[in-house]
Structures are given as structure tokens and as C-alpha cells.
Length: 243
Image 1 (spheres, rainbow, N blue to C red):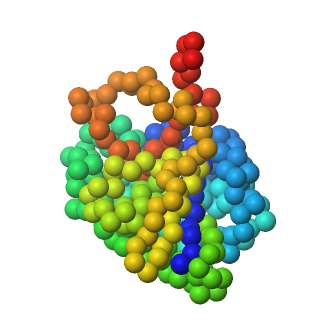
Image 2 (image 1 turned 45 degrees about the horizontal axis):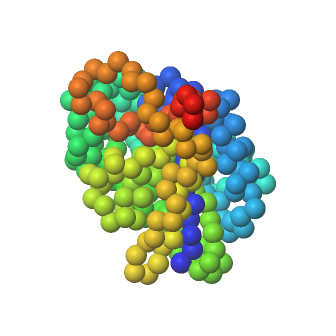
């Protein structure tokens, strides 16, 4: 079977503002465009048999900056989670909602509120089905050694990774997928293999924990950022003095 590279879109204005963008047509900011160009330098020599993207602008813009010669196929089932009434909300305010704890601890039970609110298991099912269908299509057309790329969103990619690892959806909050990161999965008839996870090619100093913000709860350190988070700024390597 073919190998898929899952690319998360670059940083957006919503990431920086701490807003849950959802399906709103937010765009990449300057840093996000730079991230997309930088990841493109690592991708452009790869012989992609297909390039697929969520239809939302931030993903389409990421592909255009990273692979300017590509004409991506738009895949609606790789679009962002339908966060319903949460869409457009400030993450620090949403973290005060009772549903936030359920999203953190038992996401398989979550359906986001409102008419456009989506159930997390439904998101996982549609995203996994889309990736597997595209993978089978690429394999049938280009052979088992083909590479293809899919650009999507943080929580969507995390759900695909969880499925590949055989994890229950309740475990997907343990996975981190940064903006403009690459995750590679090779599907086989017996099982998927995770070849790369959250690969940004970044300076390893980004792993130094940043200064702690004011946190509303003692256990907030364990929270996963709904929507995938903004990652660390490129200029925030927090170098160790004398290192």
C-alpha cells in the first residue's frame, strides 16, 4: 500500500489569537506562510502521486505555498471538526465550559453543541475512511511504493494517527500535531505503520517548556488544545544560557 504524508496547515490568525477557528475561512498569517514555504523545501523533491487537501482556505493556502506546482484535490471529509456553537470562541473561555473536561478525558462521548456541532467519533470515521479510500486509490493507480500528501487540521490528523496506532479515540488527546508538521503513515493489508510523527524539522530547543501562563485550574497543564493549538513561534527557541 502507498504511504501518506499528513500535513497540518500553517499557523493562522486564529491560532495566534487563541480562537477556535473551526470551519471559518481564516487564513495563514505571515508566520504560517513562512512555515508552509519551509516545509515545502522538504517536500518538493518527493514524487507525490496525489495531493489532497481539506477545502478550507488555511489548508489550500498551505499547499499552494509548499507545493506551488500541485493542483490539490479537495476532500470534504478532511475538513475541520464541526465545533458548532464553540466555533469562533476564545479557547480560554471554552476551557471553563463543563464540556471541555469531556473533550479532554472522553472525546469519544462528545458531540459539539448547536446545529452544526459534530460528534467526535463521526469526525474520526469520516477522516479515516477518506484517507484509507485515497490510499487505496493511489495504490491501485501508482503501485504500493507511491507517496501522496493530505493537508488537514490538528484534531483530524490526530484522529487518523490514533486509528493507525490502534488507539481508542479517547486516547487521541495524547498526540500532538503542530502547525506545518508532517506525519507519515504507511498502510498495509495487516496494519498501518507510523513512520513519522509531528515532524517539523525544528530546533530541538523548542522542547524546552515555555514560561507558564496564568492557568485557571491546577490541572490545566494536562489539557490538550482543542483544534490542535498554535505550536511554538519560530523565534521562541528559549535557548539555555551557556548551552
